[in-house]
Amino acid sequence: MLLSSQNLVNFVACQLFALLMAVWFRLYLHPSKTSPFIRHVVATLLGFYLALFCFGWYSLHFLMQSGLSYSVMVFAGLEHMHKYCFIVTLGYLILCQITRVYVFDYGMYSADFTGPMMVITQKITSLAFEIHDGLTKREGQLTPSQKYLAISRMPSLLEYLSYNCNFMGILAGPTCSYNDYMAFIEGTGYQPRHQENANGKENGKYKQSEPSPKNDVISKLCTCAISLFIYLSLCKLLPVERSINDDFVNNTPFHLQVIYLYLAMLALRPKYYFVWTLADAINNAAGFGFNGYNKDGSPRWDLISNLRILDIEFATSFKLFLDNWNIQTALWLKRVCYERCPINPTAATFLLSAMWHGVYPGYYLTFLTGIVMTMAARAVRHNIRPYFLVSDSHKRIYDVITWACTQVAISYTVVPFVLLAVGPSFKFYRSWYFCLHLLCLLVVVALPVKSRRRQAKAQQDGLQKDSLQENQTEHNSTDNNCNQKDKAT
Image 1 (cartoon, rainbow, N blue to C red):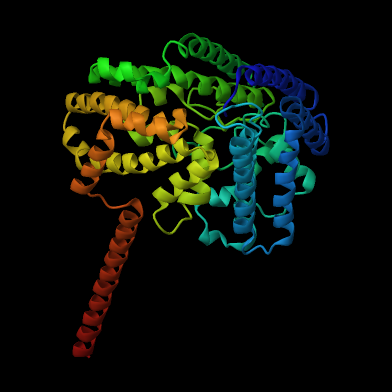
Image 2 (image 1 turned 135 degrees about the vertical axis):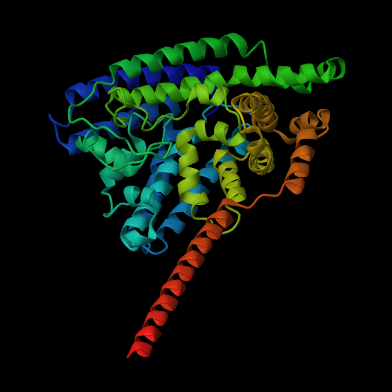
């Protein structure tokens, strides 16, 4: 979400107010003290109040988008409801983005009411797919994560609005699953449940007592303060726009241009760290986000966390960086697109991500570049990495090299995302002679690699073949035994 200085002040003020309301909500509207109905009503009304304060009458778009989508859910047939809902919700978001960018003020960030709509779009489309899975599919047709997320009844209008527009996530998210949100409202989020964490491993320990989020909230608020200080200190000193300045390009050695670009992007990221970590702290303060216990018995409050800062800054591959950046959006893209798209899911996922982010041409340039980068990184990992796993020293050398390559590749890829327009973006890429584009295309051609779906299919075919061979062997053995018995008789 893009913010001007005035909108930044309003945003921070509203989020601090939401933080105070979250503490009050947890202490005085605890599930043991009041009903889910009251918690839904209060969370929704506070959310509308914050939206009205920040965006004025533009916030009516939140209701319009939610209302249209709910009508589709109710009146469309269950078989195709999720598709219609996806088209209507994403279409309404794109229409608002076009209006804000090209009708009101191109490149200006005032009244960016589409930021909250992006999160609402994620929630509505996720909900539609989860309802479709729960009401039209058998358990055998669903993956383990889809089984956990599947919804077996249509939410009421109040539950739906509370999920989309609650005060904890109305301004900056993050998105979450409907089942997790309902468990929070009803007070069942601390009970044992089967759920996979971000690493795909089950939580091992559960305790019945309700843990306090105080330590995690304080830790995240400290992270917010440090991130905001770094961003305000460095953003003016290291602007990305300097990378396309003619004097800078003509008079600076190329290796120093590479270092400057990395530092400029490094100075830009704390803005997102601040926004997403503050949003996570607000949800935790309200009691939402509990994700089981660590091995040492300490509670984990990362159920809806949106980033892992250290994993981002020390990522050794393009995929690792993306897996730890905007985590909930990555999960949304995976659940509604990557796992369900029958043709070229990687390209479809990047295209959907670009459409969801907005209508600036720079977004599309970034995500088109990201497709090539991802394919090249996958090819390198499959073909070259095994040679460096022979010893720890070789592995460390590989990690250092891939860390440097990943940071340069990420910085190169997201320049259009920051510059927004086509002209400046191509000016930057021309100054680098499109070198990483050409290098990645060369790698993809020279080091082909099977897609994960083909690998999975090959594995499955191999298993089926082995099973048939075993059955054939057993059948032949049975026939031989029968023949021997006949001879004996």
